Image (cartoon, rainbow, N blue to C red):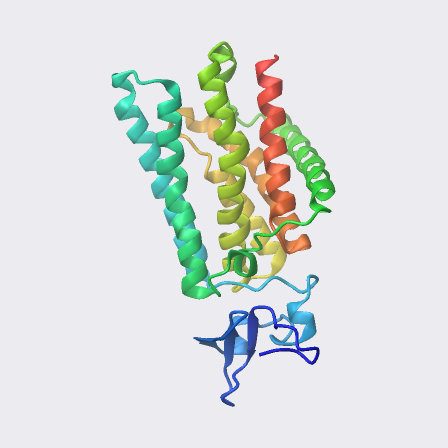
Length: 287
């Protein structure tokens, strides 16, 4: 299918060419077998197939709620498996880089598989079209702007934590004690500055946010995915101190979710996420 100028039509949902009342998914090259009723999957959004629905300013195409649920369950399982696996292997006293690699593989690789699976099962199979995995030069500017917004959100959340005397403990507690261990710091930096921003943005601002958009208003979806992002950092060892941490990180998740919704792509939130972790790492190691 091509437009009037004979340019390939980008992926999207369009009226079924067979004349049925359903919509049918065009993957950019051919019609797929996926069909959906407009009033069920796109209520409140521009009609699929129209210029507004396929433009950069159109609301992002939602995924089924089951996609969001799948991503959340996968996140809980992988993070739990990673934690207990590392604890079980500590007695072997391997180099810290090995443990970090294991944590990255066990904690993040399955989530990438889930993202690809969700895209193929309920989308076009293209992460750019389905989850907003794209980059533009302007994102080098929007990323830092988003980071500033996240920082301000953290300040507001921190004020609430302090004034209400909520128990709080940072998820980087004890990192400064390992400042002299170069292998540990490099491994942690790779995990926090590269792996986490990419995978966590794909999961929370990609799959979870879009899944929630199919059943709730935009501001509700942004809020819920933000809280889920904060809750993903809970560690039973911290006990009640997780309360303050979840509040602070939820504020970050809400801002990143808002950015993903505003820009219709994940690059600005990925850059902001990486900057947040980089600045935190530098601050801790120099404190």
